[in-house]
Amino acid sequence: MNCGADARSEHRVERIRALVQDRLRPQRLEIRDDSAAHAGHAGAAGGKGHYRLLVVADCFSGRTLVQRHRLVHDALAVLLQDEIHALVLVTKAPDELV
Image 1 (cartoon, one colour):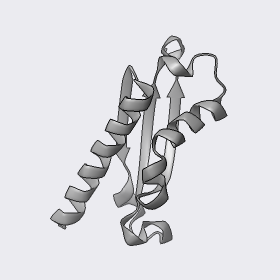
Image 2: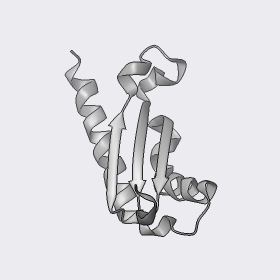
Image 3: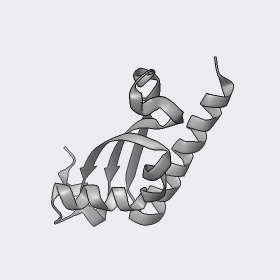
Image 4: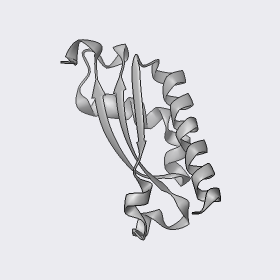
């Protein structure tokens, strides 16, 4: 086990959480680190991660999927440059939850 990689991943997840919470104020935020499943993938070289986010926020109400994803990408811009290789997003307004 590489404890350094685990600590780096945990730190990155917390940075993702902080940035999304600060910018979007979600009612619900789930972050899954899928990086281990992509070990050896070209984009994973250099320690970049693969993440899946579920974000439920009032600010998504009345916005298109593209607009919602842009809001998340804007919030994570600093990490998307050098630390995130792949990002899967599920973005919902609170009234869209089943």
